[in-house]
Image (cartoon, rainbow over all chains, first blue to last red):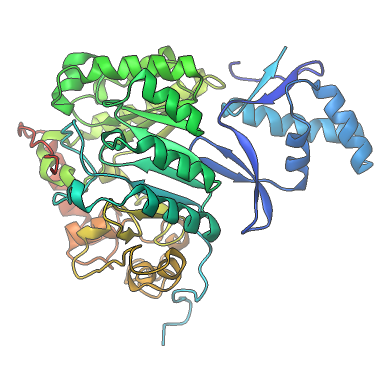
Amino acid sequence: MSAGTTLPDQARPVLLRGVRTHWDAVRGNWVLLAPERAIALDEIGAAILAETDGETPFGEIVERLAAKYKAPPEQIATDARRFLTALIDRRMVEALP
Amino acid sequence: MSDPGTTGAPANPKPPMALLAELTYRCPLACPYCSNPTEMTGRKAELTVEQWADVFGQAAALGVLQVHISGGEPASRRDLEEITQAAVEAGLYTNLITSGVGLTAKRLKALDAAGLDHVQLSIQGVDAAAADEIGNYRGGFERKMAVAGWVREIGFPLTLNAVMHRRNLDRLEETIALAVELGARRLEVACVQFHGWATLNRGGLMPTREQAVRARDTVAAARERLRGVLVIDFVPPDYYARYPKACMGGWGSVGLNVTPDGQVLPCHAAASIEGMSFERVQDRGLKEIWRDSAAFNAFRGDAWMQEPCRSCERKTLDRGGCRCQAMAIAGDAAATDPTCSKSPHNAALRAAAEADAVSGAALIYRESPA
């Protein structure tokens, strides 16, 4: 959990308690609500977090998103890993082994 | 007509993200840096649960996503649990900002049942002697440690808020260690901002320049060391900064504050600006106040700016800094924040800060209204 956070394919990411996605009807986008933070989510970010349930391994999240968006899995894996490890570093997500 | 290159207040400002709900000015602690005004209304003037529920509903419809339930000490209200539930029912993310004094395991469980999302617990020092000197409340530190334990048992995410100043900045490493020990996810290292009661205690609280520099380095090192363990937010002592803070993320831009008696302010210190009047939720809708009131529009856009702000390339970054500080030091709320190195008042401000930092002034404690 120190510098250089990793997210292996078999790890199951989950939003920590007090962190949730919320449809912001006034602005018309998804937001991630966390302690003292509200982060606007783009479509990809919202899609990644919709699969982040603490049960689905990261590798499977990537496969699902690659199929959904008809995109190369390597590209999805890079983007999703960057996105989720940033949230792990910010204490909003944890990766269950 | 405004000058070319400046813009006035927009007819339809972007909606606010956050509401600071000050439920009461009552508080068992007497911290000498309290951000509350030095003249406060008492219990009789406080909004009811029903009035708060109405405010929360209006806030959510306006675009507010998070409510910070604060005070004074919000737990001084026996109906805190009901007010929290009303905020949850309005669809807001609820954050309780508390000293911990007045909370019990039972009350925290009730807040959990009400749907509270997050607890921000203040600490005044890392041990009882240091903390209780600042809070002027014996047993305060012990209660906070108990509250932190109950918060952890329930599972609420915990933020520790540590207000730092000359008397405790040398114990910043211990403060960070305490946050980790208590299982906090976040730590706010908030150096005293000299508003409210703190303006009376500049001599007692002003850090030295060396402390300010060391705090910055300590925080930077701890952030690196504790990545993924503890998130640290740092509010530096702005008197020693080169440029001012972007106060409130811009006046009337991100948040609004409702006082215990229903006044709607652009920031919690705004009542210190002479000549500015504020509307109340009892008299007008929150949306109309946000969009149309003179107080909220006073410093939107940048047509109100004077030099050196007006032609400064940083004006979109810091928006001229803090209006209340401009009022307090420069005597003009539209002046450049005197903490800016470009302000004509900056040299005097720095000299005063350095004199305050070696002053042996005794603390003047906050008083609580009835």
